[in-house]
Image (cartoon, protein in one colour):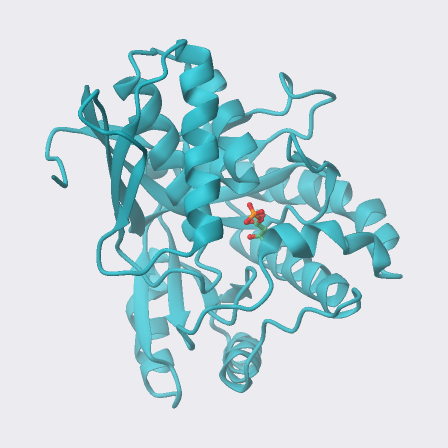
Length: 326
Ligand code: PMV
């Protein structure tokens, strides 16, 4: 059967960095994110006896051997559950540049999980889909439910699931994403998660992250944007100081990244409610409420070195569509 799914990328306000179990991708802490309306992956999966082996095609992009292996391993997991041995053809495309910290693995594995499980004849619950997507690529579980999503740390594979805490229309936030560099990063997040304990700051991040989680959820409930923004910016800084003090160190920022961070802080001093957060890449996600969106975009467009600006609203999670890619 041929099925196509679309899944959004997500931006974490409280980040997932470090695992308790590498194989099952159980996180060291709970995380909280928003799905992004303009940054998504579309994937068509067809299981059929006409394929002698799994075929994986990235439209508009090349695929590495290790990416192919990760995708076919995920298909194996789904075949195991569905008790089939049929090979598949997978065709996928992103609406944004791959491998730049815009979490293409999150939207990619969420879309693959939904398309492949349905194409294999399974009808998994949202909870089951989040578990399967998580095993494919940790943060992918947050791209399954709608809108604003919490991924629970859990105590086992079955309890480390993601669920929506608010629909996309709950709060008209904007993630104005500044693409500053589209070259591939050298160290994958999987490798980064593995060496997290080498940072002397890792323990203190773990001690403080749950406090930030409670604080941000309270601010979210009250729609207190300044408290919300302060907390997400603090968490991003906390994750990046851990990354930069790991062995080997992970320096994801470029000069333009730091320039945007400083500009955002200055705009705040000038009275504009705006905050940044950065994932495992050089691009800066600038958060504001929708009434400030145009002003924020204008100010960003006046800075030099930004390649592209993509403004994202909160979005629904992974879902099936009827238009196939092949
Ligand atoms: O899901 P992974 O293994 O690509 O890890 C993602 C980690 C960050 O993007 C840096 C933070 C997060 O929570 O999304």
